[in-house]
Length: 369
Length: 175
Image 1 (cartoon, helix red, strand yellow):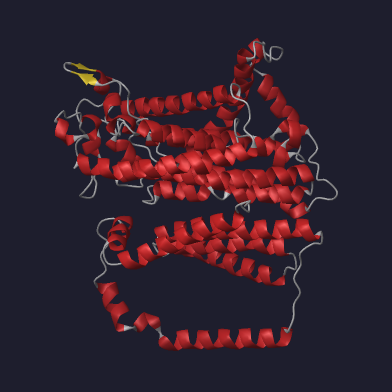
Image 2: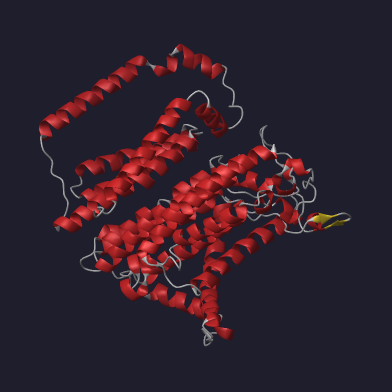
């Protein structure tokens, strides 16, 4: 129920602010002011835009395939929103406990492609069709490095359950009943031979990115691939406005266009949550226990308690939102790639690199026992 | 329990209705998108059978992979030929006849077999215990021990297919 009770309202509110933030960030980077008219520092600009969008006529082009055209935005949003179902939120408040966890997430995200194809084909416009074809080729290609980098984490954590992965990255590792074979203690860099146990130190030292230092590279691969999955710059060829107007959503207007935008921002949030959970310690605090200064315990309540919920939610949401901000920062900093560069980056660099990382993760896991 | 049954029959109904719609629609692209609904409903039925892993694998392989490939194929063919891709119905009588008779045959056999009363199902019902450990764990261990050979063969075949695709798609080399 987390998904409906928390993520649906959160997603709507977040999108309003994210669009505003995007415009302000772009304005800051380009040395402009950005929206300034509606409300204090333009804070009500997105709300005003949203109201305008909702009132606009829902235009279906005469030559469009009506059924596909109308259904596509709903399919896209449903798929992205379904991805939120398995995300944990705090130590005591998780989404679906299905053990397929992150595998489900990957599978359901890949359905996004179907919605985009429906939109691109249904619009019956060459811009939309080219946008859709590019988007699909890109998403399918980048699913491979994305999946492989997630697989690296799964290999170290030995579980697909995102809540389980979260518990392993902090001081509450013993608080979740697990099946035998999972790690019960953490060592510095995951190496038992070093002999420095970090189970009770916690903080950033037990995050996956520290438990397995090579995950720093895996995280970068994950992040690049997730940018491509969201069709965000520098991988926004599918909607390259200078050549394709708006890509697969060129023909949409009003509420349906808003729905497509909502799914795009939802997708950004989803992959940011996923990145934070897999690599950046999920709802665990970044502050370690140091001797009597038990920062980790002070900044994270025990699972199930009120403090645990509040701290957990705070850390996870902050991490995810910071990653969203980094995505925006990158969008307004880097130019767009060409199609051949896009494919070369994926197939010639990211996939071999993630395959090597997968191998090294397996070796590292043996050192952790 | 009754709620679960209602949900189960809803998914079963969508699976059957969308499958029938695939047969009746003449637009190949519609058929492909309807096939997505069929696949998803069947994945949901797998979940009801407590086979989550198979359900997700079904979505991943069939919907995320094969179906997208089919839709791509249809779209690109349409672009090249310029005509809408439609299907026709041929041999209606024989098709219906064979289909319906085969369906009746299977139905009678299933009803005759009376699965509920088979000894191993009866004993399984009495001694039923919730599965120990996680299914995924067991699948992984089985794949790496008892079924390692088919697993590796599948991996090699997929690798060959990948290499073959890259070879076919590459630019012809100039000598």
